[in-house]
Image (cartoon, rainbow, N blue to C red; front, top):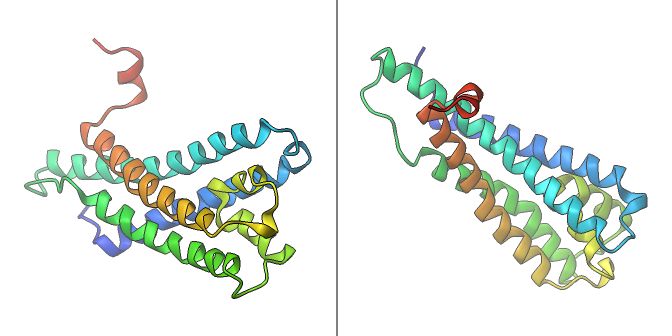
Length: 180
């Protein structure tokens, strides 16, 4: 067992992030008939963000547990402290590319068609219910993609670093249940 390089870790983390976006998109499309009620999009938004953050937490935690095992086996001397903050920022940078495309649509560079909107539910799956909170999606403010990008920039590295921290501390479910 050896330490993975940072590029491999970023690819694994990005896979978890994309999977979280896809799951959020599936949840949003599944709830589409109910999203016309005023409170359902807010609840759905909380759940989809939780799913996205949980998957990033899991990616960081698995890496932290692997680092802890290597430290106990004396294969490495130290554990990098802020590893997943930088990896999370790189993953958030990848998530900002669709935010820039949505910003271009809101500024009028591209027409915001139904196909682009449906694709946005899966690309921005973690925040897709926010599209239903906006009254008129086709008259969307350019501030919406900027806020969306800022939230991705905050949640992605924080969730991944928290998972990494828990993985390093090697807390398992049994430890939480029967803490002494």
